[in-house]
Amino acid sequence: MSDSQRFPVAAHVLAYLAHKDAFAPGQAIASAVLAGSVPTNPVVVRRVTALLARAGLIATRPGASGGAWLLHRPEDIALDTVLHAVHGCAHLGSPPAGARGCPVGEHIPRQVGKALIAANTAAAEALSRITIADLLATDPAALAGIVLPDRTAVPA
Image (cartoon, rainbow, N blue to C red; front, side, top):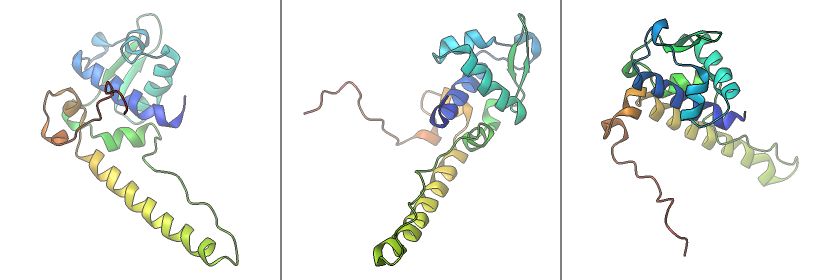
């Protein structure tokens, strides 16, 4: 699974567990069920849940009666924590090294690096204000004012 997919899958899994009130071993949700909601392969879900369990966000039980459940309330799980748990990246890349002896090549990588750090910091700060509970809410304050592009629109 690509780095860019771990975070969205992890957020989806945590939201699904919260939606199903899976807070104890008896309420564990199987990886096949979680995978059907994403939708993705159960192996992908098991890889993500292993990372979430290692970070202490969920617990898991293997086997036919296994599954995953939350160890924290959804309002206590911020998305920046989820991002770090799955070793995700909110970064936009790394600047190229630049050519020695070129005034642009020697200067721009440092400046682009600073711009990327600023963008990463802003992304992490924004994610720290959004929780799993916010993802499940109809109109959460943490997501107010964010408008997604209309994916059904026909390009001109």
